[in-house]
Length: 500
Image 1 (cartoon, rainbow, N blue to C red):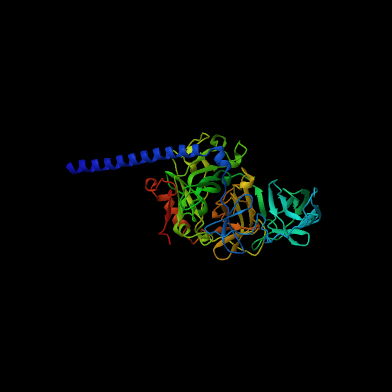
Image 2 (image 1 turned 30 degrees about the vertical axis):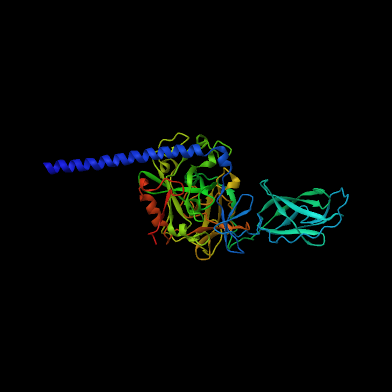
């Protein structure tokens, strides 16, 4: 009888402890959710940029590519000479100007190339003959992209009166350019602006990697709905700008709700560089996930979770492979996969839903860790087994859900490769699906959007999930106890070191 009573008391104690831990975790989740939602003000969101990792073909180093195309060295201090469009010329010393005096007229700019209305490929020399009696102090060209964004690029005086620069990485579409030149007269000098000349880009089969098929889709809005529509979303988060973690910058990526078959949590699969800063050794903070943002009633990414069809969720922590965390991109590209763990209680905000569980409301996509994806099956086109879709929320197309598609190949030994994919920054972490069921908008995830080249050439790499540690890391994300993970800035996650 006494033993029975002791056993009953022991069971009751365990139950009580479980209830207390659950209540504590729920309270912490609610508190964190409120803090994160309040943190993302319109001003902070406006400063968020894609964490778009690229590799410089010339020096083999990694960079973060800003929306204006400039490159931030990642884990090193080598400034690249490649501009937004991959300027190939080094800045040479300006020739010594002549004259000066009372010159009151601006420079003459003629002739120029490419000519107005010319069709070019992905690389082009831009040049003009620029003359002035006082000499030329500086010349700048302004490129206007098909979406209306602009980029200023310096021209270099290469010979005589010729100022030029050669750019690469153009994508198909209608572009414009103009030149502004300033002479060397007294004061600020006289300036002349000529142009708004148009040019068309037709890259044809020109690409940064192998492959490409007639049915390839470079970058297009997803209009088929289905499971990917609701389960894929935008990630907002912050990472530090230096190892001291005193200043943080806002970034955007993409992620997908993955089928996890456990209760109490939902799992988001994304790229490791959207979870852990390998250069400054810190996990992301203030993470916000917005599923199906494409259907927002707002005009773009904002702080109003009430205008998104499913609202917003705040993940509790991230999980990465220790090989990603202890190395620096691009040396760690084989491990550019990771997961965010979301509590099924207290993590939702905004639009009313029937359940706080993310995977219940948004649905979830199976991740296939055992499938060996098909590559180079010998034929081209969307009906072939190797035809693969990459999806995500590109920064330049906010808030639209975008996709690319192509026959999948490989890039060296560590990555799958979609040759014509032109998804822009912000799509990082979005899913790759081979064997897409268009009518249902779903299929197994075999990889995630990872990295491209700094010169803007088409093509995107994705890490291999089969025969890697991806499944082991995923299983850890399914089982790690919420209360065991730190909640301090830079430490909200686990770098798993026992899967190798």
